[in-house]
Image (cartoon, rainbow, N blue to C red):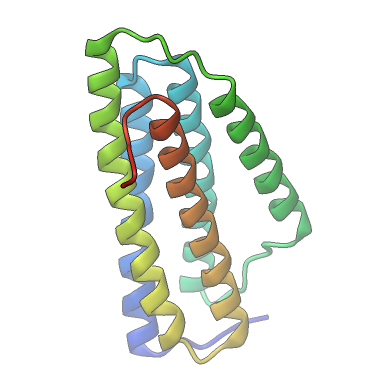
Length: 163
């Protein structure tokens, strides 16, 4: 199914494209910097999902509706469940210096996910095509899940204390 995008829709997708590219760079870069092997894996998993988001945005920009069917949703759910299990079984006795560096990486990525999720929220309301809105909503939910994963990791490691 081919779609026609308005100028505004194209502009919004190009913004999301640059956001996804930055998320991929950050997650890959931070995976190399993270001290905790569990956090490295979390960042690598998120980088992979961000690449899927970028692929979907690129397909939309080419006028095509990407397939984000059950297979992707099941794969995403399995990754999220594994991530949650890894976070729950984490060793909380880490070196303070490593913990501080990892905390900085997590804080930056949590802020990034908050921002990116908010930009998807705005974009969703600007699209006329229901299928595109659903795809953007699906991506936004995954961005929110990334934020939750990071929050849970931080909380389980004493890096984030909600008040």
